[in-house]
Length: 247
Ligand code: IPE
Ligand code: IPE
Ligand code: MG
Image 1 (cartoon, rainbow, N blue to C red):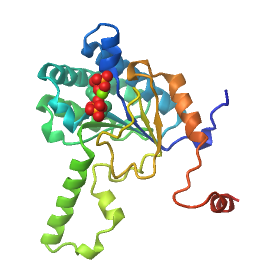
Image 2 (cartoon, protein in one colour):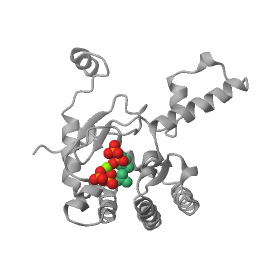
Image 3 (cartoon, protein in one colour):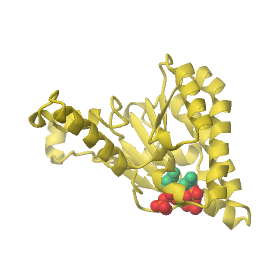
C-alpha cells in the first residue's frame, strides 16, 4: 500500500457518520448500541485526524430532519451527546483541539446547549484542529438563515443588494471563517448528501464506503485519504493548465 503524503491531506475533512442503526440491527442489538459504538469511532477518528495535522474536522452528528425519528431514539442520542461532550473536554485540551458547533442550537435541549457552550469556552484558546459538530443542522435551513440576515441588513439600509457576493454569503453561514471541505466521507453505502453543507461542498471530493460508522477505523480513514490523494482537483480547468500552474 502506498503511504500517505502528509503534504496532500485535506485541510478540511467533513464526515457523514452513517450506519450506526444498521450496524446494531445486523447484530440483533438495539439501535442505540450502534450509536454508542459510533461515539467510540468518533474518539478514534478525532484523535487520528488531530495527530495527522488535519486543520478542520466537521462531523454530521444530528440533522435537522433527525428530529423526526422516534422520541426514544432522539432522547437516547441527546443523552449520548451530552455525555460525549462532557467526557471529551479533557482530551480536547490535551490535543489542543478547539470545539465548535454548527446548526440550529435553539432547537437543542437547554442542558445540552450549556454543555456545548462550556466546551466551546474551555477550548476557545486552543490552536490545533477545529472540531465542528453539526447538530440540528440542515444545509438549506442554513442558507435560508443567511439570506434572512443579509435581507435584514439591506432593509435596514446598512448593505446594498449589489454588494452581496459569494464571499459575503459564505461569511453569513454557520461556517463563516472555515474553509470549504476538501473531502467528504460518507459511511454505510448511502450515496447522498442528506442536506449536509450544501453550499460548502461545491468542490469537495466525495468518498463513499460500505463500512458502517461503528466499524470505520484508522485504516479506513487512511484508505479514504489515499483515494483523495489520487484525485486531480481541476476546479473547472484542464489538466494541462494545472500542470503548468504547478510547474
Ligand atoms: C447515523 O446512523 C447516526 C445518526 C443519524 C444520528 P443512523 O442512525 O442513521 O444509522 P442507519 O442509517 O439507520 O443505519
Ligand atoms: C444523515 O444521516 C445525518 C447524520 C449522519 C447525522 P441519515 O441517516 O439521517 O440520512 P438519511 O435519512 O438516510 O438520508
Ligand atoms: Mg442513517
